[in-house]
Image 1 (cartoon, rainbow, N blue to C red):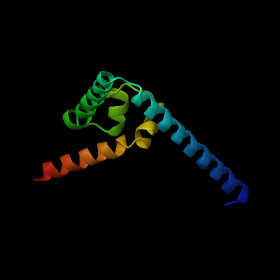
Image 2: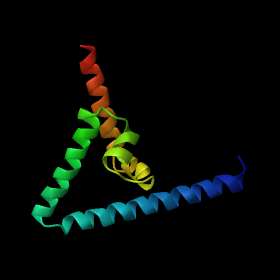
Image 3: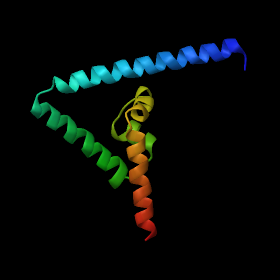
Image 4: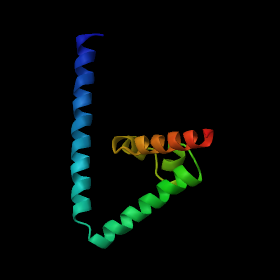
Length: 101
């Protein structure tokens, strides 16, 4: 790999990392500024959709993002960044193991 390409990839990686840190910070600020009741509503809404997508429908990660949450492509990566794909896979793996027994 050429040095120029390596340098460009490193610049891109750093920019992505900085963007993610800024997004997380803004999201934490948003959460902290919600009332307790608004936090309860947000928590309930998200958990209800995760339960539908992963437990009831046993859908794919893509199914959850696009069909259950009704998000566009921009949230596919955001769901990975915040750990939802890991949650989805852990649920899926646990259900698969349960089905084997």
